[in-house]
Structures are given as structure tokens and as C-alpha cells.
Length: 408
Image (cartoon, rainbow, N blue to C red; front, side):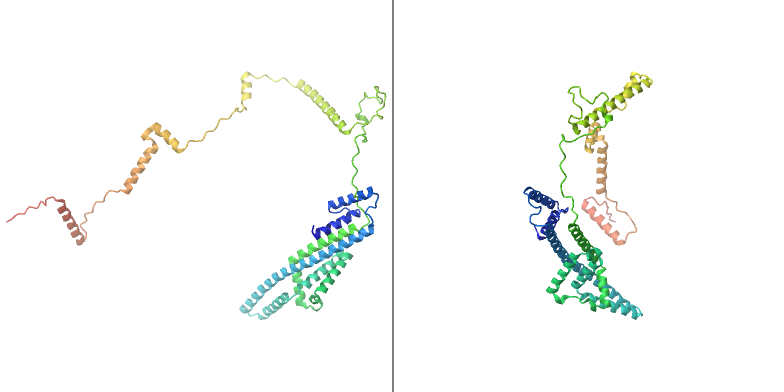
């Protein structure tokens, strides 16, 4: 168990010993056990410790808890101020660059020069500001402004204790807020108004207020009802009053069997009485409903009888089959093609399409040779080449020239 949990446990245990309702249930249980043990051995409720001593111990523990909370509040404020300082410096640098760019582009130099001087001075103040002293000042201001916090003596003592420890450790880091100028005041306001600092302030005030409220409740003279509720009495000791209108008319105040009155008899248990009443009520309701149904049946006119066919169709119109037929999936493409091949053979549609596609593919990739055009307008060189090729082909073929030579 760490020190924080141990301190919380001791505070809750002392509250339970003082008769208060502690926030930790196990603290109430431990105080009740100790109280019952002391009562069984004839000792005082809290041993040799009186109520005043218990209150002093509780007050000391609460002050220690407040000192820890104040210490952590300063740390949180310093972190939030550092975060806000970084953000504000970045924003001021951006504004400074914009002012310098505007100064070069416009003729109005006086306004832009003032902006440049102001932003430069605020940036320098932000870089050299004492965040530790500012965090301490923010904490003191918030405690003084909150009425519930400023009226607590324990919180004031905790603040003084923390301040004395801080001064003894680092006296040179004290922030002299009396010699601040307007620029530094403006920079402090910018830092305090930042969202991160405001969130830290709200959480710190809420935690301090809860501790002070716990202190006021614990040190008050009024005690909470800490004694556990007594257990329910046995069934024999419980008396049940029955109204007179629920007693039947044929019962008499005395029982003829044993001559004793009903008042002398031990009352019956409540758990045994309730079911009998419910049974009686349901029986009465059932008899009344049967009686009314019989009267209604007598008043109704007899309905005409239906024929045999009408009864059959009326019974079977909305009647579902006992077993719904299983929906078969459609056959695949190859299964359907096999079925068509068995029926039509080579004349099946898909086989005809395959033959047609094969023929078109063959014609497309093996076209017939094109005839050489006999164009008389060819170039003489092309005509000579053509005649030469024809002569060579004729000579190679071995056919006779069919040229008859005639001698004069």
C-alpha cells in the first residue's frame, strides 16, 4: 500500500471511529468490528483515545493531505503555464513576422513599428518570466477569491507551510511582483487566461473544495447513523392484522373443537396467507368468467352448419405442408451442355458456335494471297523489274519458250 492510499485509509478510519459515514466501506466495517469488540470486552469504544484526540489526529491528517494537494497544484500550474508560454511565443512570432512584412509593403510605418516593438518586448518578457513564482501567485489568488477556500484554517496553514519550505529551499527564486511594469502584467494575464491554465485551476479548486468539505463534515458534532439495521424478527413473533371484511361469515370468534379463541392462537405466517388469498381470488374469477361465458353462449344465435367441402377448404386453405419441398439449384453450364449433346449430338447449338468461331479464326489468321495489280502506270524501273522476274520464273519452270525463229 503506497503512502497516498495509506493516508486516505487512515482518514476514513478516523471518520468512521468518530461516527461518520466514511467513503471507504471497509473503513466503516473495520470501525464497527473494533466497536463491537470493545463492547464485548467491556472497554471504551476507542480504547484510551478520546473523541477530542481522534479529532486532533484527523485534523492533522487532513492538513497533511492539503499540503500534498497544494504541492501538486503548484506543479500542475507550472506545467500548464509552460505549455501556454510556448503557444503564446509562437503566436507572437507569427504576428511579428506579419508586421515586418506589412511594414515593407505599406507606407504607414508608425503603426507597424509600434506593433513590432510591442511584440518583441512581450516575447522577451515571456522568455525570461519566472513560472515558479507565477504559479505560486496564481494559487494564492485563486484561494483568496474562493470564499469556501479562504475561510479554511487548515488550507491557510498548508499554504504557509509550503511557502516556508519553498523559501528555505530556494530563497533567490522569489518573484518580486511589486516591480512589474505594464508589459509584464499583460504577459501574466495572457498566460493565466490560457485554456490549459484555466483547466488546471478548475480541477485544483474542485479537489481542494472536496477536502475542505470532508473536513467540515468530519469535525462536525453531528454523527451519522452508523449502527446496522436490526435483523427481521422470526416468523413466530410477527403479528399480522387481517381486516374484518376478509373473514368469512360462517366463522365464529371461538373454535368449537378446542374452545379457544382466535386471539389465543398464534398468528399464521404472512408467506402462508398470501397464496391462499390468491387462489381464492383466481377461483372466484374463473367461476365468474365461466358463468358469463355460459350466458353469452345462450344469448348467441346458432350458426349455420357448413358443408363437408366448405369445412375441407376452410381447414386446408391456410394449412402449410408438413415438409416444404427442397429447392434444387440450377445445373451448371457444362452439365447443361452435356444434356444438349445427348439430345442433339453435333447439331447442338454450342457445338455449331464452336465450329463457326474456329472457321472465322482460321480465315482471319491465314488470308488468301492477294493478286498483283497490272497497273500500266508503274515506273519504268518497276516494269523492267517485273519483266525480269517473269523471265526468270519462266526459265526456271522448264516450259518451252514457244518462240519460233524464222530465217530469211
